[in-house]
Each structure stands twice: as C-alpha cells, then as structure tokens.
Length: 338
Image (cartoon, rainbow, N blue to C red):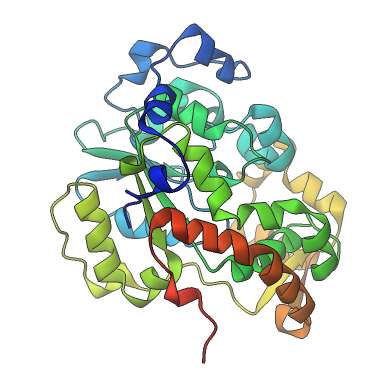
C-alpha cells in the first residue's frame, strides 16, 4: 500500500520532506564518520548504487519479500541480503560482529560490488532488518537518504504482538536473550519499539517523501502472494512478472522446535574471526557434528506466552491504531479470529 496520506496524517509537511531529501554534503558526511570509505557525491551516482530498500523488522516477512522479488529481470538484489551498510559501525559490531567484519558493511566500494552485473537493472535492492529498529539503530534513514535520496522504501510489517514474540525467540536462540519471555518484553524496549511501526515510519518520513514508501503486510503477502507482489511491481513502475508456483512457495516460517547454543563461549567463538577462517577449511560433516554437540533443542509451544501477549497487546494497541491512521487503512488481517 502506498502511504500517500501519511505525510498529512502525522503533520510531516512537504517542506520537511524536501529538506530531508538532501544531497551529499560535508554536513551529511558526518553521518558516515565511522565508515572507512564514505561515499562521495560522484560515487552515490554510480550505476551500481542501490535504489530499493526492504526495511522490514525481524520476523516481519522481509526475507520472503526479498526472495520473491529476486527473479524479476528488472530487479537486482544484493548478493549479501543484509549488508547493514547504513547501520552505525559501533552498533553493528555490538549486535552482529560477523557482519561488521565484512567489508560490504563499511566500505562503499565493497558494498557496491554486491550488485556486480546489475548495472542495467532498473532497481538494485537490499534489505537489512536493522534498518527499522529505531531508536536502537541510530540515524539509519538519514544515512540512506544522504547516499540514495531517490530510493524506494519497501516496509514489511507483521501483526505487532506476534512479531515481537518471534523476535524474542530469535534472540533467545542466538543467546542474545536470557530472560524469560514476559520479563524480556517488559524490560527490553527493543521488542516493543521494533513493533511500533508508527515510530519506524516516522523516522523515514523525516527524510523521504511518502510516495517513496510502500507498506507490505506479511499476512496479506502469505495469503495472496500474486496479488500483493503485483501491487509492489506496479508501485515500482515495473512490468508484471509471471511467477511459477515454485517461485512462490512459502518461505522462512519459523518451526515450533528450534536449537539454541549451549554455551556463551561457543557463541563468542562462532562470532570470532578465528572461527570464520577455520569454518572455511573444515569439512561440512565436521561442522554439522560440532553444531549438534554445541546446541540443544527447545520447544516454544511449551512456554506460556499469554502474559507477554496481554502486556504487548495493551502497549501496542494505540501504536497500531496510529500506524493504521498513517497509512490510511485498517489491517483486518491483524484482528483476533472470531
């Protein structure tokens, strides 16, 4: 859905939006002070520079949308799905040290190489979930606007309570979260803020015109893939694409049973440069045995999440209403089943 009403609904006037869509300058270069190679004005006009960003939060369908768009001949998706180039480097090092060591996360030339061969594509896109975690990932929309002011932004959203709980389980699996579910969602604002879609959308409307932003609801994408994707392609000004059934299979659905690292030390080793180097030299069978020995299975269904759901529902209900007002429609797919 195109959020044509959003600017008026939240008081973001045309002057504010136009002021946000600045060109590269010395002042905006300060946003990239942590990067080893900042993009120059000329580099930003490179034929490989990205102009399509999927900014959906964790567990909101962004990976599925990325995969569905990839076959279109006029879209070149990045070879690394989540390069996180526009995330503050110190924040990325703390949250995802493996990616922070990749040159494409901080070197503009290496970043552009993710679209090697895509010079003639109408759109070159990437999608990093950290791009919609304000205020925990700072100034991301400003950085994107400084380097790619004419970019199109695809914002994927999922029912806010379910998304927040899925986010918890993802972090629990990676040993980034040790607290019980209800305690964690009450104490860590990351889960609530990332499901506050009005908060995330406002951050982008400070730097992009509402016509540059299109919202995709994960539940609607799952139920009507062809229809939703046709709407996305139409918004992008692209010709329709005839997907075959194989290309539209369901993707990235979290299983009820998953595996978690047993020991924090093992996770730190896995995130280290030492393991990255060793991993490339080890046979896959050895890696599989090490993974099995260092992880333990857990079943999410055994955890009573009713308290967490009640708390999140009360907290997020007014924020959902604000978001729906911003985009000019009610999302019936998020209503409780009757």
